Image 1 (tube, rainbow, N blue to C red):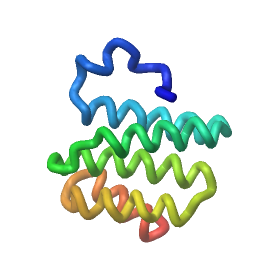
Image 2 (image 1 turned 180 degrees about the vertical axis):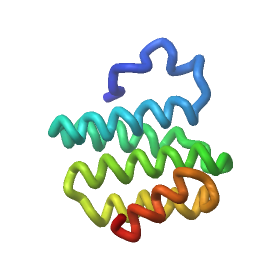
Image 3 (image 1 turned 30 degrees about the vertical axis):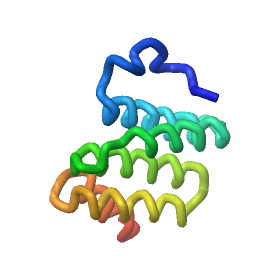
Image 4 (image 1 turned 90 degrees about the vertical axis):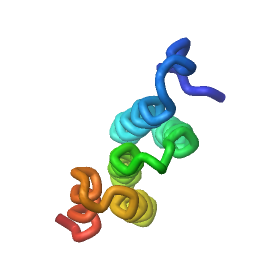
Length: 104
């Protein structure tokens, strides 16, 4: 089932922007207690993000790590943070992920 939100814009914006949208929404849904919805948006974001672009992969990974943290899934959060840090080690998202992994 496709999540609502991007709608007609799905084909008009680039995949990384769509991935970021779904990652933000995953975090929001997790914070609202909608775990199934958060997981659905997490899957959408992961399927859309083009990892060749470091800052995009880093940002999406950081957001998904926050969503997993919000769901109480520490291992899932660490997974996303580690992948995002590896994708963008010198960028802001990579640094934020390094701090999250260090427990800051």
